[in-house]
Length: 148
Image 1 (tube, rainbow, N blue to C red):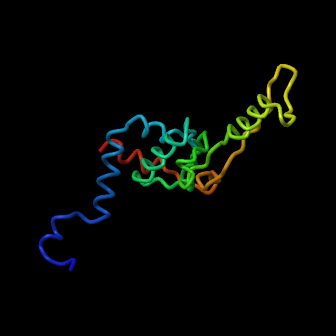
Image 2: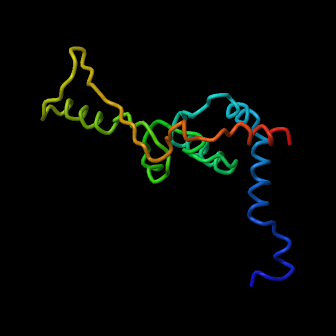
Image 3: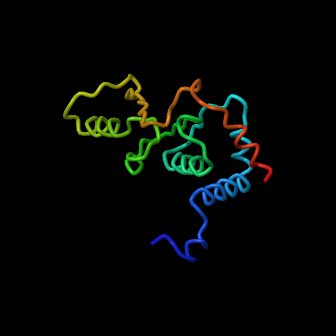
């Protein structure tokens, strides 16, 4: 098993990864330009879904999160909770709970004179935030492939 002529038709895993990396970099020049920015240490995504797409793109391009680049997003969406993307939770579940009790009137809920209820955001670090000083320079890796 693993021997024979049919195995020669399939590229090795390394060759496949190199081809995929070259293809990604060749077809997404705007991301390559962004990642080539001097001093870039993190990307902020608009939501968790976008952050996952960025994370996968970086992974296939050979960029390690968080060692090479940090990613943080917003939402703390339950659909993505098992994935390694750090996120900002706006506290909408707690806010909804408080709002319901304001309407029901069964428990006192603190609010301002204009009816605003205070809320607090929480950063949930799931492993995609790193220390910039520990990163290698990824620009060399990207600029070498951008023109190919």
